[in-house]
Image (cartoon, rainbow, N blue to C red; front, top):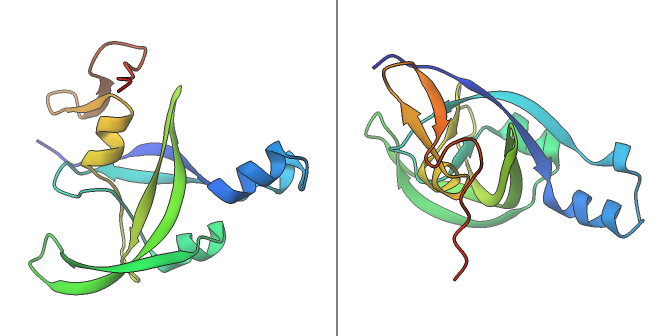
Length: 137
């Protein structure tokens, strides 16, 4: 399977709430369109420090993680960020790898948006077709 990227939009979740309640204008919500590599080996969204700063995301905690190259380290984990792909969205924390060259769209956001990797065609597809299936517990 080759490597491919998908355009996603990242949005500051607190800004979205402030806009919903009228504290800021919709146009003031910090958003960023990025090319992300779907990576089922990553557990969540992985961003770099530049993306974190542009979105104004707060660090909530640190977590010990092992990267694909085998390096272990302690990385910052942000508050939740809204992740949008086409007609789907979810909100999850992001792991910040300071100088990461790639933004990774990990297993949790893929699952939450009912998406899977199509290795034959090198793209994301809906597990249950064009509409996301949301399981309510």
